[in-house]
Length: 70
Image 1 (tube, rainbow, N blue to C red):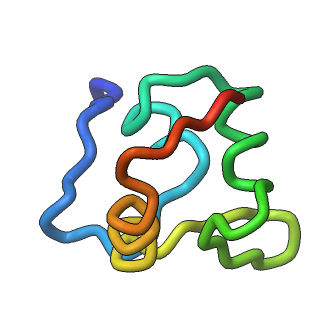
Image 2: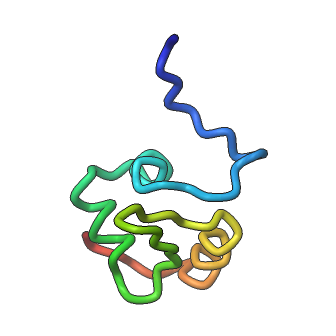
C-alpha cells in the first residue's frame, strides 16, 4: 500500500502532529513547539497529541496577521 501524504480534510475530525507538519510545511521539532505553545488547541490522550479540525480553523482565523517563529 502506498503511503498517501495527502490529508483528507473533508472527512477528518482530528489532526495529529504529522498532519500539522504537512499543513504548515514545518519540521517535526517546529510542529511540536507549535502544538505545545500557549493557546494552540490540542487534546491529549495518554501521550498522543490531537488537534481538533474546527478548533484549528478558529485558531488560524484568530491569528491572521501574526508571526510565529518556531
